[in-house]
Amino acid sequence: MPIRNFDEQTLTAEVLRRLEATPDPRLKEVMTSFVKHLHAFVREVRPTPEEWFAGIRFLTETGHWCDDKRQEYILMSDTLGVSMLVDFINYGKTGNATESTVLGPFFVEGAPEMALGANIAKPGTPGEPCVVRGSVAGLDGKPIAGALLDVWEAGGDGFYDVQKAEGTNLRARFRSDRDGRFWFRCVKPQSYPVPHDGPVGRMLVATGRHPMRPGHLHFKIAAPGCDTLVTHLFVRGDEYLDSDAVFGVKDSLVVDFAKNASGEYEIRYDFVLKRAARAARAA
Image (cartoon, rainbow, N blue to C red; front, side, top):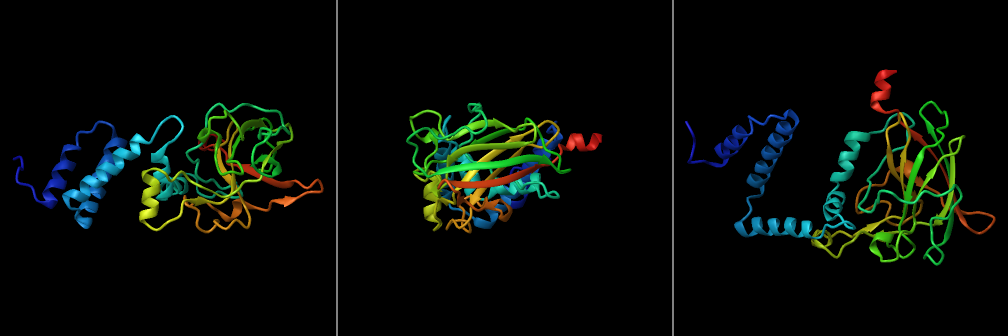
């Protein structure tokens, strides 16, 4: 017999009952858990109608700040640690494979492919010159030729190219050579604030947090038969390593940026990719 006079518990039970006919098993699992946790949160916090509507306004405004150049929901996920939690669950440490971290809101598909050794920084780009060298190999230590490396970073002024009107800069694609090696030029990464002029920024201020990220280079590395790696290389000694606004720092990804004989900063990092789950099962 239908229930119409709900209480705090029977209302939740009825919402869950109405989800029982969900045809997709995974969607049913996700929605059931979501409703359970959402209702439990509301019972714990016991918001007033005014507080409830303030939350609705926050979510609505967050959506309004999203466009093809800015993803405020990813920023919210990053600053609440959700992005890194998803990362831990899906890409936890395996052997000597390079650890992953968040993609961030400023990745752009289809960056220009450049020859090894090219400079991803346009002339006049703020920042100190830097040379990046390294290699890509599998867990077995064998070099991976032709691995596709997307690299991107903010300039010395703390902004990514998509935050400006000057076109593509400080991002490119490279392919490792036959020995798995790669090298390119850029600028030394500097710490910078995540965009904090919108609702996520106000959330950080309201909770007494800063918006700063330690200096880092982004990498997305793909190769046949391997899991795609999304990671950063962080600048050792950066003052925000222990308070990264998006919780993305891992000790294995912190590297020394030291000046070479030419007076430029230089780093080396050797990436190790995991075999794709499907390839591992077939072996």
